[in-house]
Image (cartoon, rainbow, N blue to C red; front, side):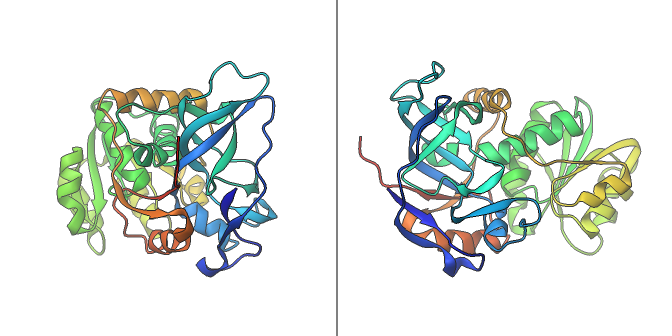
Length: 311
């Protein structure tokens, strides 16, 4: 099969397009013919070796954890999915090697859900990692409920934009940080936008003088500290970017594959409560360009790699 892989850590230039062995299909997995795979910041951070301390790399590594596609072969024990089913998944293993930037991926059923009918394959590929991150942060770490005021950082990005939609669906008021070019987009999602940079704390306090009930940090560093300072009494704090959140009494969230959570997101998408904005797509052979663009950190929504497909 055609795939993207890298044989050493490095910049985008280490990504190679070429032949890789077809994946083996375990008893509790299905073989998915890939239609699209989303790019996430963790992909290029893994490629550059930033996660070497927590994830072993078995080279050559095929990058990518997000996928959407069509089941072409169920494993021997699988009755959840059949040939022809359209699926999406957060197909992360506990080491780096067999990713989703390929024509085929063998995905354990515990990582999959049916693709929402309301989303295209490109949109569905952008939902699993970002959506599960937002879902698990809001529902488990922050316990967001109706009437809360929630602060979401990088609210126009992949995780942030879905977090805004989930919080609004839960009945919360949402304040979202973003560059000014994305403020109208945030208003469309139902958030009250505030600009990044100097004076951020004052701008948030002007909207929420008593502090925010919950804050989702997606940036870390100074942004995490500002978030802690903006909490109301008994406010809750979570970060997906900085383990120092524990020092502030908050929760660190590292997204976990969860088929039930993914199905809940799919249901919300089909009900119109959640959608995915795809900023740009690249063909598989241009995955390096997709990585470069994602690393710039200014993406609205998701960047997606597509795979040529014939029925």
